[in-house]
Image (spheres, rainbow, N blue to C red):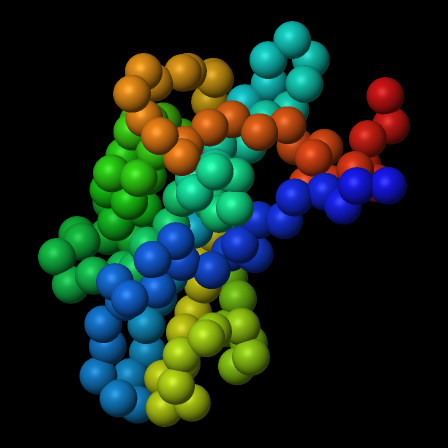
Length: 138
């Protein structure tokens, strides 16, 4: 049996983009963007299905949601409509950073329609059940 692909488990698509002083707190913004096409649930992924659109909350972002929208549009070239904060993680062992920095991961759920973008590499809609086969009760 072939193992299902795994997402980057809410980690940043590009960890090097995060900048925070030693001993500070950084916030990662993560998006689960879901569409249903022909009865199949789909998730928008980046990095050829290995990560979700995400990025650090930066000083230039007016709000958490504005930062999230900027990262999704930059990485996935997909505009966001309504999004809802889904969950916040702050466990010490979630981040791959030095022990001197605490990372808070804030995840959002957005519902949308599937749209294909011409010329956008490494971005695609993946079947939800590829990542969660145990949930497939069809």
